[in-house]
Length: 97
Image (tube, rainbow, N blue to C red; front, side, top):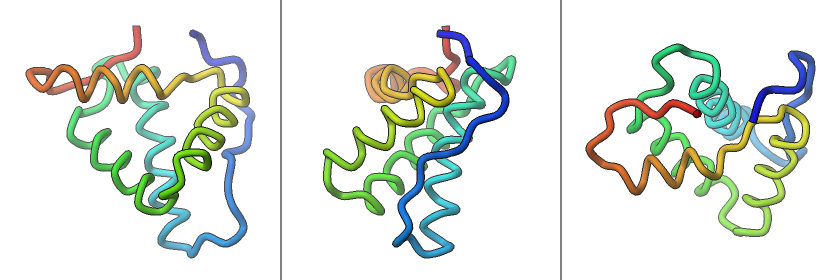
């Protein structure tokens, strides 16, 4: 899926600390890197940012809501990237197809 716009807002929760906000933004930036960087994003970097995202948002419903909102705003799907990173430990880089 192609990115729809260069101008979109990240989905955020008001009760996050600055450190939590930075971790969540890093997760979304890694999704962007997988789509935009010619090499993609390093697999372990993507997985670590996803684990941090999960710690900040432990409720699966919140995780899904944020990821769906990000995809709706950006056109970038993170679900399949995380799945490929988990399912393919032999890959060093994850690139959106």
